[in-house]
Amino acid sequence: MRISELRLLDVVNVKDGRRLGPIKDLDLDLERGVVKGIIVPGPTRSWGLFGNGKADDYIIPWDRVKKIGVDVILVDAKDLPEFNTDL
Image 1 (cartoon, rainbow, N blue to C red):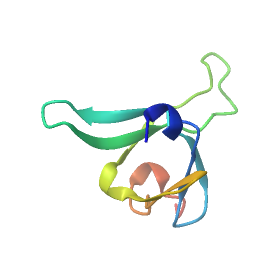
Image 2 (tube, rainbow, N blue to C red; image 1 turned 30 degrees about the horizontal axis):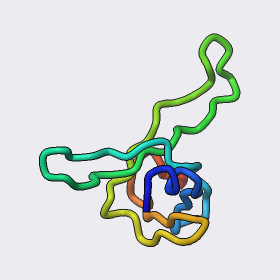
Image 3 (cartoon, rainbow, N blue to C red; image 1 turned 180 degrees about the vertical axis):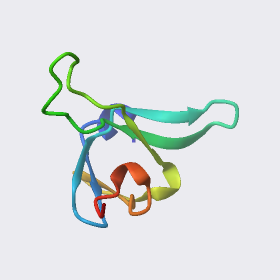
């Protein structure tokens, strides 16, 4: 599968079913030739008056990718602090 095809898929957290957005990029280890993770956009801040209203992008480690389907990528982001909705 090509990165251009992956970027068309939505990333969904299997813990709560929340849509995390499309893949923006891949985190690669060029020396070893492996994918280290996927990068998804951070949440939009509605109060972003002086900036662009965007938070930093999030990196989801590749071992958290559970399934790549036809139209969705399922990830387990349950204990990653940036995706913790229990607070």
